Amino acid sequence: MAFLSLAEHSLPQSLGPRARCLAATVAERKAIDRYRARQRHPQAELAERGEVI
Image (cartoon, rainbow, N blue to C red; front, top):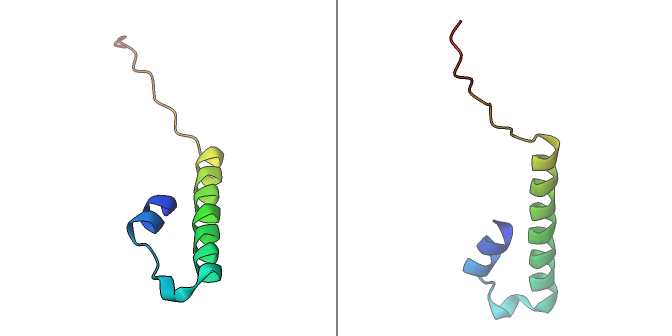
């Protein structure tokens, strides 16, 4: 999502290459953080049983 947000809202050329690089680095790190957070808290589907007690 961070990369898509960065791509949709491109930075103006007046900021210069260092600011653009910084924004890309921040977006990359944010995406990595989200990936790691999802790995720590996996979501599993519950299997429904057809048995009635």
